[in-house]
Image 1: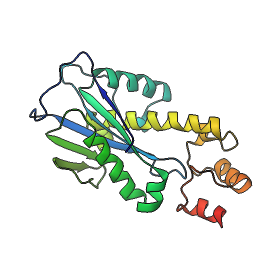
Image 2 (image 1 turned 60 degrees about the vertical axis):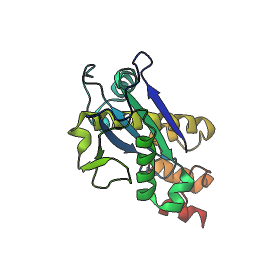
Image 3 (image 1 turned 180 degrees about the horizontal axis):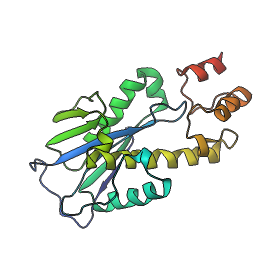
Length: 205
């Protein structure tokens, strides 16, 4: 399991069963043809509010980057986790997304009292959880999670661009744009492409 955990260094660890902690969870990367799906879980600190939290898709890249650092600095704790391309192909994208969400929650240093998940499906968890449609625009902790997942995955796509500059990952982030589809037809699939997704499967034939 691959995940990145962040805990405020200056904050004394709270007991594992601290009551009242709410974690927000969201994902990035369900739709692309390449790369892992990424999920983040965030427990915000009520005493250190963060201004400007919103659905990551509604924020500029510059603002997302700034908020990414601020969330990591001010949240009580957060965790970013992935489900790999291989897991996506093996399980399907929905189950892989739920797996990444579960990994993000399980990777939190503090155990939440309740987990709020964007969307209408819940991962298997050992704590109380609720799915909230459009939660990334309604719940600040989910907004924070959407920002962490989006920025983390976008950075990963920039790294992919360095490895595979002919595909344009830095621009389309793995989504099936015409430029991406044309690169697939001309150069074939990379190891980072999801083989079970139709445009990639067509090329592999």
